[in-house]
Image (cartoon, rainbow, N blue to C red):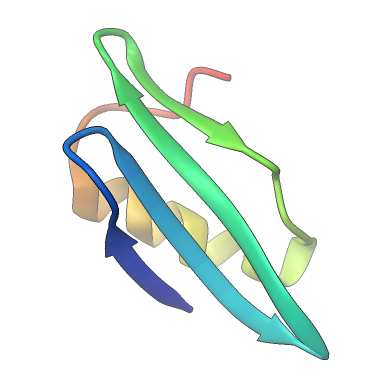
Length: 60
């Protein structure tokens, strides 16, 4: 899974599973919001990205 910081508060995670699938993590004062939950094979990569960002758990 490709992980990159797009701006100070937005992170992009992309995986190729037949087609490219993007999910976004948005950092705010309460933690992280996951935008577009992706598909189940992406779960570990998303959780690793949350740990890497180090800004608390996913709130939404």
